[in-house]
Length: 424
Image (cartoon, rainbow, N blue to C red):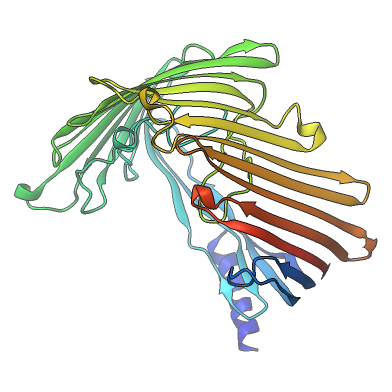
């Protein structure tokens, strides 16, 4: 009873506090549950000792959730010289166990607009990030090498790191032509002998369609070093396809200078979550954030005898999508002059999911070939399910395994799971 009274009181308070948005309303009630029975055959044994284990497994869960505040945003308005603030909160809920979750409001934007004509000028008074070179180069598959060197790309500086930086950002320029940004920060309330400062200045050209042209420079007094990044890319349309050449430069004082170049021949989306299966011990395969296309990429330290990194990659979910397939592959080389060393590897992965009437079939496979020592690993999985034979019930059979000890993962004969799940 006390919990019910508490919820009613919270509703009354919500209605009083949030006059515009969010909205106090009991219109969304989640009440569901599921129970499953599985028969599992572990061909490697419960602890991997090799002796097959078999047995049944029961699982069940139920969920009751009442949404009594619909999350939303609220923002100020104005004209001339005015201050814009936008706040946001998410849904507030009460769960079946009596727990009430009310997420705190957050500030999403805090900007003083000074000029808003073709020439604009505003001041963002939220804490600056002091980051440079964040976007990298678009490729068919992402990898650790597909963005500028981390030492130069994630410059939050060695300044102001012992406390969170405090400061502001000025944004100005000509709309749809060119934009500038100036971040300025210090290390908060300190004695004059302890003060530290940092700034980042960046610019981006907006006047030419499909052209990306950006540069940024930063300096921090604690580390007493300068950092600089620049990126250029131009998308050339070829009907439903395109070519995207790009080049980038990253420089941090006292560290190597890096030149990056990439070329993507694309035919679909970018930043696609491929969700390929991974090896069991954290060994990577073709990663997420893919783009339909084929690409080449090189990272070149500007010094004598540079270790030139190279990445060839390909991905498709468009042409093969009608068949339920996603396919990706990449060849990553740390130093072209020493090809086959430094864990240089070829990775490939495929994922399949398609409905055949009332039956849904899923399958996945992946391989990694480490060139040095000719080390090879593979993973594989298969599943079939049906949710139409029995009302409210899903029947399924799954198998997954891998043969990957040579690449520092594991040799697993695999696990077979036969199960049913009733849900509402």
